[in-house]
Length: 277
Figure 1: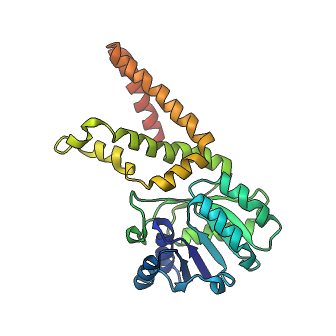
Figure 2: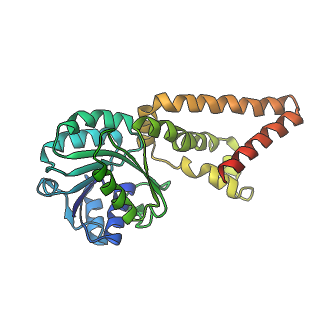
Figure 3: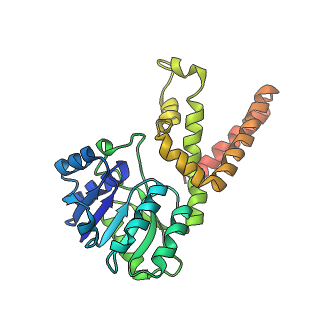
C-alpha cells in the first residue's frame, strides 16, 4: 500500500516511522520544512516526497497538520485523490474539521474518516518523533454515520497493526466534549499552575507531583490556541466548572474548615479510586 503522510511533525513523523517499523507499506512524506524532509529521509521514515504524482496513487493519506491547515490541504488537494483512497486527519479537534470536509467527501469516490491519535509529548517537531509513540495508545476515529463497515474495519486493522492498543469509534461531538476534559483542560491547568511566583524556586523542593503538573505547560502555543478556540463551546464549561470546584477548596482554607476540606479530599480520592478500577 502507498501511504502519504502530510506534515512530519511529532505526530505525522512518528506515524511515518511507526508504519515503516511495523509494515512493508511504502511511506511518502510532505512537509514545508526542507530540513525535516531531509532528516526524515535519512532516518528512513519515508521512502520519498509526497508530491502530486504520489498523492494521486496513494491508497491512504494521513494529514497531521493544525486543524485549519488540515481543512485547507484536503480542500485544495481533493481533486487528486484516487477512487477508494482513504483520507484520515490527525487533528486534535473533530467537529470543525469533519463539518468542513463532509461536503467534499460525501459525493466523492474517495473516503474520509476523522482521526485523533491519543499520544504525544511536550515537545514538537520531527526531531522528537518516536517509532514507539503510539504503542498501547488509543486511536479515535469519527466516521460518518453511514460509513461502510468494511472501510471502518480496514482502518481499525491498520492502526492496530502499527501498535495502537485500541481503536475507539465515536462522533465528532462526543470526541470534542471528552477531549475538552481529558486533554485541553489539563493543558490549561498546567499552564496556569506553572505561573506561580514560587515556581522559579522549586529546585530541591519538588518531586513527581510538580513534574506531573507542569509537564504539558511546555506546549506549542500556536497549535493549542487554535485547538482551544476551535473547541471553545466544549472547553469553556470545563474551565468554568474547575474554577467553581477550586473555590470550595479555597473557602475551606479561608474558613479554617477542616471537616469541609476532609470531605472534599475524600470525595476526590473515591472518584479517583473508582476511575482506576
